Image (tube, rainbow, N blue to C red):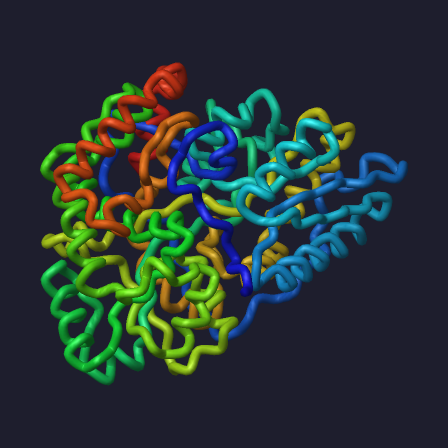
Length: 474
């Protein structure tokens, strides 16, 4: 069984170690949608090789320096990731010949999280991979106490300011360089859709009609691998964004800044109802037993029309050599209002943060600056093919399918919880059994949330309204 490029997110956010990854921001009036940074577009030629542009003060000492860099294992693209890192590190050494960069990938999921915590606690790492800041990351990592200040690193100016604010900053300073962000979308086999004259749906009724048409032609509409239940968070995130968020755009900001949330409101119940009805009608009937790591290969086989997943799954689908000619993507149409269905849930992904206990802080800043220089960044992102945080052009079927979906984005609900908060962000209890109705499930979620208050209420007040506006409001 091959691993995918992404580790799984936990279905319950239950403590400081539950999520060591995320994005950041905040406001009492959090809008449902945001104008996204410039979308990557297709180009006629591939990215150029990294240039030997000088790193700022690349070598402040002739003494030998070793920089230890750690990241998670990126699954099926691990070898490409390693090669891309070797290329950048090799070019950096040309400018700072006394510096040797060691790069290690330390597993996925809990394995990565535990390894990262252990290395940092033992002060045996100089630079760690992170995800764009989320409330849980800020609490767990305390960037202003633990990370190197990158605010005046020259390459930061190459990044879209929206992305610097959303995914890299805390208390007015930059603490990590976030190279990419990702989102939750629906991948589509355009050959199947074309065969039955189907277009990407813009409303819930159109989405249902598409599913009915496919079923009438003996095509399974939707592939989801829910044996590892936490993979359901992508579908839940899309439902929440389209159905709940437009009716209550302030919900997540209120949760973070005031500890106030009501999961029993009509918009939440409707989101739960549509998620349940849609999954029962259009998912592969065996979805609860399909292992998530197999889904990219299954989808590439051409047996399914659609797959709700992360934007990061596109690379896995292509790596599996799809039998179909064209890969497509759209935002899930779970609402009646087409405008509400155009907003993509997103969060920050791979980032570099330096540890301020390091004896090599100047070298850390120089290496991170070198990574963020345009040509080096372009080459790395052409391999990674996630949503870039700089304005660059990426080539290939994955960025071409995704580019139209970046016009409006908002922070995914999966990134808006606090350590100790018990919240079923996968909706697994609802989707995988008939134990709950949408109404009773809403009561269940509310009770779990309320019962966990002693574990997370101490963090309320750490995030002010201006932070919430920045995080949720752009």
